[in-house]
Length: 310
Image 1: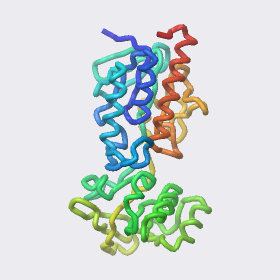
Image 2: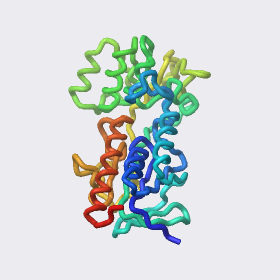
Image 3: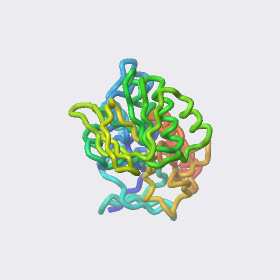
Image 4: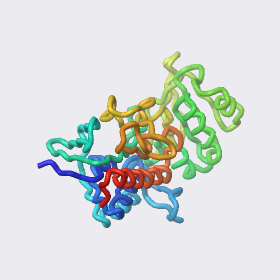
């Protein structure tokens, strides 16, 4: 039996859960396909100190659990499955998770983006314990420490520059002998006395038991390896938006869903997108939550124009 829903939310980070909360409070009885790895990138963050309302900070997984409970309290139906297929060619839209099928009058896409990782020994084991992909999330915890940033684009320049507000020293590791970042960002890095650029190199292994203590660097031209003591390794080699399901169905730019600012409308009427799946600039929990709110309100208004309000 195929279920009909006013709104289906795909994803369960701050954007997805906030959309679900607002939709549920509007009596739209949303269905949330939260995915098998629910909670988004905050599940990889230990302490969150920059989310409003938590003066003493909160653990990332704890914050996401609270958001899920809040949405469920208002009767959002939250299912631990990932959408495996969507059909946006006509309304109501088709949504599948394995053998289960739903029809949706509106869809909010909040599938997020995944940080790119090197896939090296120690990286996964020490995530949240000194290995991070978000300087603005975690930089504060590394006051007066020595850090390593990996990358050569604008994001890497921004992360390295930001970390110098806290760190004693930042080693910027880049696999080539020139950056691909914009000139202004390169100049900012070269003029910063706290940043040491390590050219033609990559990180081969990250060391530490319960926290990062060092990294093995390899010079790609000479093959020489060196051990560098460090308290944190920040990956700044890009993000991959989780949009494979929507290719050929929605307008995308570099893989990210294009929305009609300041709304969350996509190129298909009735489909809305929020959070990191649309955001190449901010990528913060609080901005994702704000977009999730907007998406639910946009969906509610769309339903009203279709005569489908609850």
